[in-house]
Image 1 (cartoon, rainbow, N blue to C red):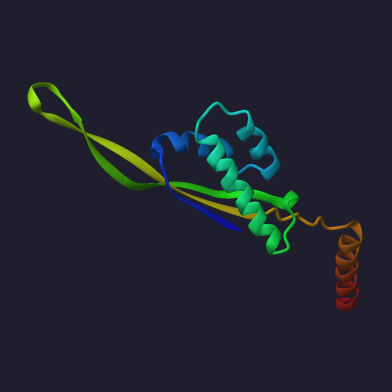
Image 2 (cartoon, one colour; image 1 turned 180 degrees about the vertical axis):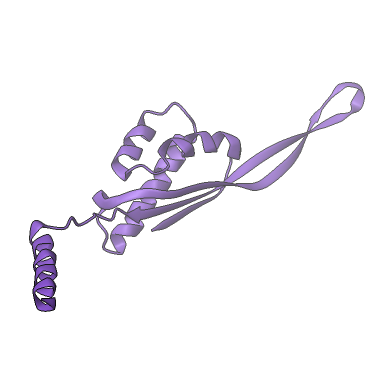
Length: 133
């Protein structure tokens, strides 16, 4: 359940602020937080998350069990531009981009041991002690 967004036109530093908020959360909670977030990167990350959920559904996994295992924001290409400056000089402007990688995983539900299993183990220990005598 992976999804990628390549060359998103916003600096990785700004996108990582949004990514840090939803890392490790369930899909429903992450979508709710991204809906009301006042950051520009919120909408593209939400679209990416919904794309990853759609990929999971294609594989037959229910979205209720999914959580964000990994959300990595890497540096993309840097477009170099020039801004005119004083006395005929020019200053370089770096227009940065981001690569966003999203990985979803299923929650594993722990199975608790029942009392019957403990009783069986105790019975085996008692049988072994009786057999030794």
